[in-house]
Amino acid sequence: MAEYLFSEEQHDLRNAVRQFCADRFDEASVRRLMDSDTGHDPALWARLGGELGVLGLAVPEDRGGAGGGIVDQAIVAEEFGAALVPGPVLGTVGLAIPALVAAGGEELLPALVAGERTGALAVPADALTAADPTVTADGHRLTGEVAQVVDGGADVLLVPARTPDGLALYATDGGERTPLSTLDRTRRQARVRFDATPARLLATGADAERAVTVALHVGGALLAAEQVGGAQRMLDLTVAYAGTRLQFGRPIGSFQAVKHRCADLLVLVEHARSTAQHAAWALQDGSDEAELAVAIAQATCSEAYQRVTSDAVQLHGGIGFTWEHPAHLYFKRAVSDAALLGSAAAHRERIAARVLDGAVATGSPVVASG
Image (cartoon, rainbow, N blue to C red; front, side):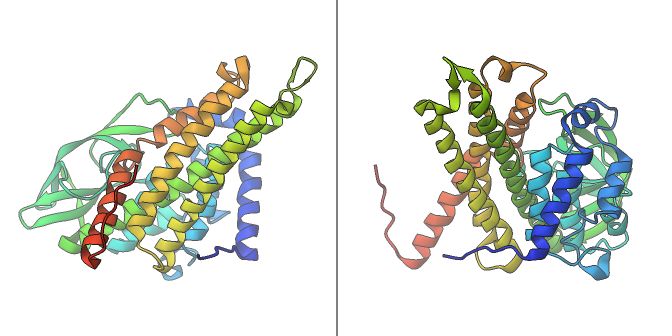
């Protein structure tokens, strides 16, 4: 079994991002930003790109990035998830930037990496593949609608579209963006409509399909890391609360039922962390099949995050259900995240199909248990 070890530089990266989030994205700031018009602070977003340089860690240096890897970006995603950082993190860092790196959109990358502009991939929020786009292209004009786009209000949209010659990937600043009412106010979504909207062609055919596929894989791995960060933060808050909340004259954490429940949640979080790290490493070094690793991570982390946040609300008792406590913010993020880039059930189907295909290819018997 592979052992994933972080370098000293990666530990320093984690500490720097964690401190920045503690200083700039405390609970009061998150609540303020999630209710703002844009859903994020453009000045802070620019600091993430310029001062910290954490928006383009996996972008090659000769294309304006830091020249790191997906593992570095996953470390940042985990810390962002722990702090519930509001803003177009998934749309820009998880989807748009990887698609541009794969498609060769050099002139669009620097502004996104520097935090000067935001981006999104105009695919359905629950997209698993680049198949069957709902937008068509006639020359350099786009027509169609995508009903639910993560960070759909971004400055730049990358749009997979059908053409007479197959799939193509376009970039546009246009389109009608209609904000959607969502459970998680820290991550905006929008309906995007195109009506002969001018766009620039980035890639066609296999190159376009590869760019979208890479973006969905990277986005899935970073989403899994973000879920681990959120789950760990809620577990930490719950354990701390159990150690101070008194019932019958003793901390509730001293009761066996609470101890066992917290221990079960710890196992879930650690399991989720392993799958998320595996997905990031598989994407970075090709040591495992990336699609399978990402599917395992998304199925595992989605369910773990929902379970941890749900149990955390209950273990906090009455205060866990109140608007004033942060538990509901993490719970809403967990439920919302579980529906993004494919549900846990959809990813388990992909895993089963891959396992079955592998068994058929090798001639191994498939044994059903239970």
